[in-house]
Length: 213
Length: 107
Image 1: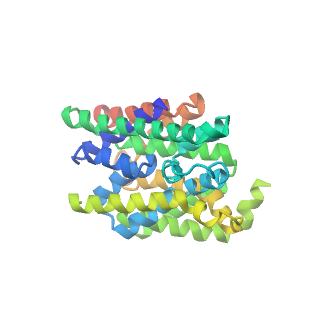
Image 2: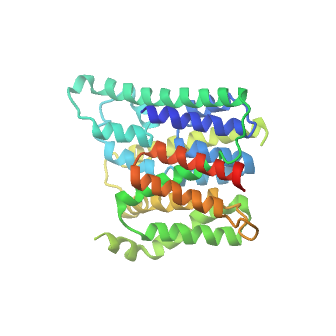
Image 3: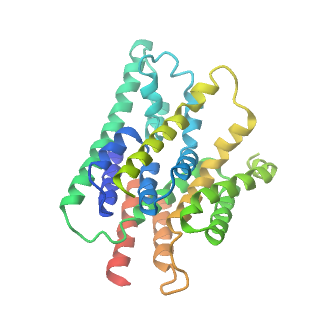
């Protein structure tokens, strides 16, 4: 969980390195609250990406988190009135925590879930706020800091491979991105890649699935 | 983007992000999710992660020196660290510092 704070710090630092106001960091961590998406959002601001494209890209960047909910349907059943907050706070980290802890007594369960979720978000919130504040005070050479985003995705990609042990989705991702880089302008690359990848994924559905079994 | 546009963008991301998380709770409370949804949710995450790596590298100019070498080296360095030490913080931070050093001191 400490890791969340450190990663948040990097996000805040990166955000203000592009001369954005520091308070956008806490604002985003409070309302959006999604690690990867917030990092990518800085790129959206820089490239002046349109709102519809932002919506589509956000949906697909976070689609893995729809999967988390599926496996928590039962556990979240009796968690009113906190259910909406628990669902809102279902980040990668929180999901990993909630699925590794053991349930004890029914009564304290929901409070425990809420506590963990809120603790996670507060680490992220405090980390990103500090990163933004400190980054806007200090002046050091931040050239190359944007690579933290690439590094984050390299790490997430390796983790995905460990889970799935299937090379096809990665090949589709590479092919779709390179095609998009060649055929469309830079600011349309993300959404175009997603569309190409979806078509490819369904075209080669049998092949992709057979690999697993 | 102006601040006004940024607020709008944050609003859109807040909404979409919550919708992705609440999606199964709205639609699959009673019934099992259809097969194609399960298919997308299983196989799309690795696809999008690969796309995002290339997305962050899309503006590299491979036609002039150093031909994207800094980025390629840093990606391999980060991946190597992660496979070796399996600690995502070390991988991300050391990878970034490695790249910053390349950009600021060497090339």
